[in-house]
Length: 116
Image 1: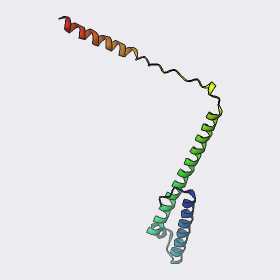
Image 2 (image 1 turned 45 degrees about the horizontal axis):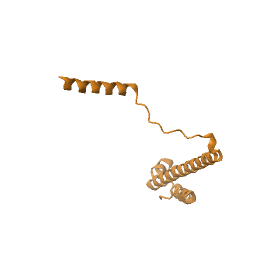
Image 3 (image 1 turned 180 degrees about the horizontal axis):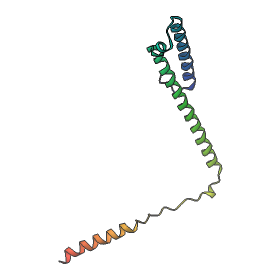
Image 4 (image 1 turned 180 degrees about the vertical axis):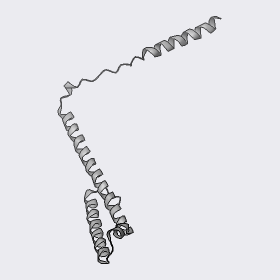
């Protein structure tokens, strides 16, 4: 059941729901009460698979939505003229002042042993 297709997952969900309904009807026909029906292993398994399928369908929908949002952003970005977004010049970022102080200290420390 590792399908990424929404259509396949919807078919699987319909099949599982039909199997669960059929199983519940069979157990009710046998005269079992609600507690015993809820403890039935096949019913538990079918409900778990339905839950898994529903979660996967939500994930697929979220992925489709994200893809659509990214496509809209890309189209918007491409629609803008390139003149509005000037390229920043590549400049070496200055190290923070603490780093400069440390370098000076190292140079001073290195100079002192040579003098002595």
